Amino acid sequence: MPNKYFKPHEPFERNPHKYDVGVFIGLKKGYEDNLFIKKLFTLPEPEYADYYQYHLTYFLGEEPRGEQEFFSFVWQIVLRRIRYIEIKDPFNSSHALDMEILEKLLHFQKYLRSIDQWNTQKTLPEIIAGQQEEIRRQQTEIAGLKEDLKAAKKFETQEFINIADGYLLSFLDICLQTQEALLPDNGKELVFSQTQIVWSKMIAKYFREGNNEISLETIRRYFPADKNNPGTKYAKIPPELKLFQLKPAKKRS
Image 1: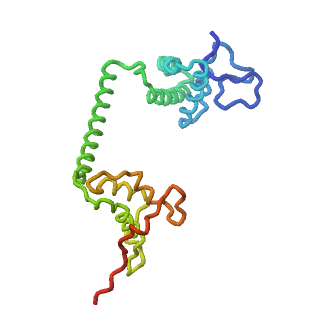
Image 2: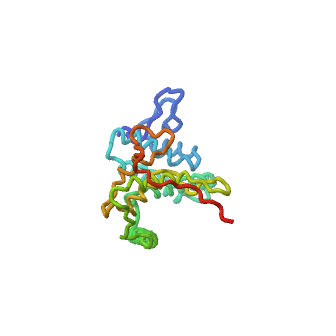
């Protein structure tokens, strides 16, 4: 059966990708598993994920739904090699090298376990234990979210501040003036926000005009991000509705 899983070293290619599998004359049929492992031995552990994904991408180009098949194939290659080393005579002359190779294989197998979506080679107790751990993690996360929601609800209210009917823009003008107000002692802003949308959301959420809801999009037209260059989609408060003037109070003695 010809290789279909790994991106091969093209015959006589002088500048192949460093993850291509094979030798200078190409990839010999039936040796793809050996050469995949051999290439693995040359790579540092941080590159295991890139190496695996490189060949997975190649395989999925031919078999778009074959991710599980590819994983199983690689898993079996690694597992067979681990078992082969484990049953070897520990007193043979290559034992030190075997242990070095085994360590690399076990590290790569650990990476494979981290991306295993199909519980490959896991026993039923292992699967159940994993599911229980995931349930505990989710329960802890849910408990935290409930506490966050409880804290957020403390600031929720069904009551609103009502603006006299027809005077919404007069109120918006006061808000805009407030943004320009400076403290008399140091010249800093009285109030400051990173974005203008905060004002629009606050007014739409907590204020009503004549007991009617206020449209967020309507308010946004009066709060441009750049007041000096607001653009054509923003509107100005009509002069006849600018009923109030915000100015510093005289200093008290």
